Length: 167
Image (cartoon, rainbow, N blue to C red):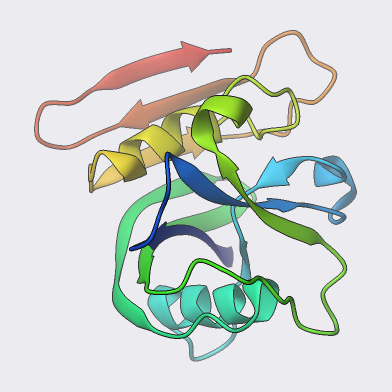
């Protein structure tokens, strides 16, 4: 089973409700959609190591990480994604690596939460990350672009169940 990581970058100097977003160019089903930074976990890497590596590759010269932790997972027949919350000291400037072809930018959550380019499960994942909720698990068989509904199930430990959220 393939394993991936997405990164919720929590900047100390965050202004408003800024979220680090990447406009994907691949895979095809994500082309021109907005996601969190991330990618495949390489052989021998932990999810946290992969998250920090991907963040540096995609965002550039992030000066320091002060905390990193796995806060939840997304599971499906296609594989598993670890969502890692990474505290960063420096929010800007963003300078993606030379091999990166995707746009990356900070955007206010209130400006993007209803944008159709945002991946549907992020409409739940980002608020969970912002609130500090940990231990959640998504079951998601997406993608659903072009379909009327996108369904996923979410489990949150400590009495926070959210069931069968259809969007």
